[in-house]
Image (cartoon, rainbow, N blue to C red; front, side, top):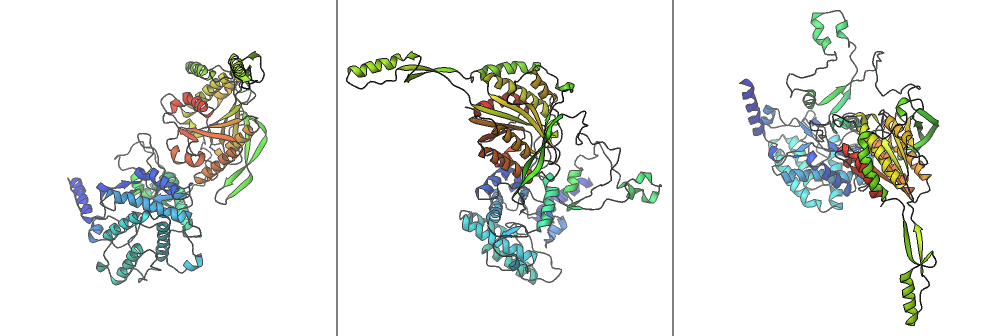
Length: 640
């Protein structure tokens, strides 16, 4: 009974405190794709991803009912760093859902004006002024100045945003505290903020307030000014994992999960409490540092995610101690006796560093591998039984693409007379016209002048199960086998390769079939022997595959990439760094006349693949088990 009364009281007092309109709420996941397209259409950085912002304590003066209800202590503010545009996970500030949606679009447009405007960057925000001119401003005045200028720039470049901005300003002023109810110093500051919203550019700095005065209520129409290093650290350490989120019960990502600020703390000195001398008075404090794994929780709602959501910031520590009894699966390289055979001494390759706008020459080393001849898993093997029916069907379909012969009519010379041309020539001569001398038929054989390299992602993520019977790596094996069977029917030159990586010094490139090899049982055995492991340094693999295709004298060259996720590796090759390097590698391939095309089973692929391969350079397969049969069809469409 006490719990029921408590919930009713909380619901009533929170509703009475006001400030929110849950029925009109708009969530980030509902507008994320629209906001991404809108940001790029306005000239924003195409490499930035849209993610949820952190929820921070603002410390501003609140109403009495809000203090009683304990509500509105924290707010999620839009901000932008070098790799992410962070927007509130949910906006319910206005009673009209259209206004809440407009606020998302306005913040996106304001961020685009920051990202595309020339000039220096101060506290994460761009400005045309020198940093010295703004050095004397406090954090609040600096944020006010920069956001006013960004607002003026946005309204100047995109006048269509003007009516939307005016509606948002009017609605925002109604929700802000009235200056008449504030102390004099806070009232002057609030009037200055209102003037900055109504007349952007008219407020040079906010009025000073006595020490100890609470900060002003955050302005929801502005981007948060933050320290470049602190903001980036919080975004990279917490946001990259939290905002992307895990998968829900139905297998889809929850893109609206809140990000968290983090701080790094030292590990406790005593971590093995149960091994110390027992002292009853210190049992609880020692037990705090014991690693506990519970299979279930007493209350399903009382879990780690909900607990973390109530924290202002998370405290993380790094345990540098190495324990000999720990086993590291798959991330350590296998012994030389168990590993594939290395071909050559390694190939140096460049890598693009978008932060320095620099192509690092000879920064990555790639090792070509082949299955060891003594490995029983790579022994010659026939096509698996469950693929033979599909292989016969594909073989019949692709046999129609084989080079054929056809008669060319009305030729100057040839092996036979063209009767139609002879009749026309006789008619022309009889009627006094000049007859044609092209009276022969010529038998011509048409050749398909193309080469294709299929590059498969063999990273550890492909070890995930997609059903009770198959893993991702099993689907990739079947896809490569059926792809080889289909192209064998056409006579086209093709190669099959796979890749994975362990940092920049060891990119593993598996040569399963070369262009001059037949697709036989030996190749099938190599394909069936591939196993998942390590990480995905996609840029280096694309560059080497490009060099292999570049050596083929073919009129049409296709690079077909099979992947299940974003580029990533251990040594900072993650997030935007890996995406930008892969994008540069794709651009280099196109400059050499190669057509890259990516086929992925990553459901979130549509959020980053257009930046990598263009709108028509990729395909997302929702059902991974359909990949083996659909992969040859993608090839047929690319070669029409």
